[in-house]
Image (tube, rainbow, N blue to C red; front, side, top):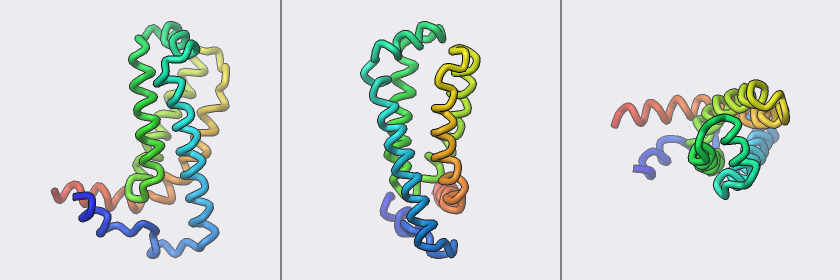
Amino acid sequence: MTQVIASQIPATSTRTGRGRAATAGLWTLQVLGAALFAFSAVPKLMLAEATTESAAVLGVGSWFFVVIGLLELAGAIALLVPILSGLAASCFIALMVGALATQVIFFDGFAWYMPLVGLALVAPVAWARRDQTGRLFRILRRR
């Protein structure tokens, strides 16, 4: 199934008319975003002390942060897969909006800028890869 999908959507979009510099910039954002979210997942998956303290403040179990860490790691990998990168970036936008709200509401704005950094990295990717995301959904609907 993955070969069928991969053959229907080019790895680099030649139809968009994007130049080499724009394509290189987009891949740079994808790699930086993937690195940010992969590194962000590590303390959550290892249940670092700060993670368990944050869980206590929020009134959720540590499992909540393990799930978030798994989602971040999966999304980081998906940012590097051309057919999935737009969808992953869109999901990260939702995650970062929630993270920003959490920082402001529960943690008095401590580290409020971190979700904004994540947003700045993935929002252009979501926008630039929106055609691939649409194609992905059309292919999946046909199945």
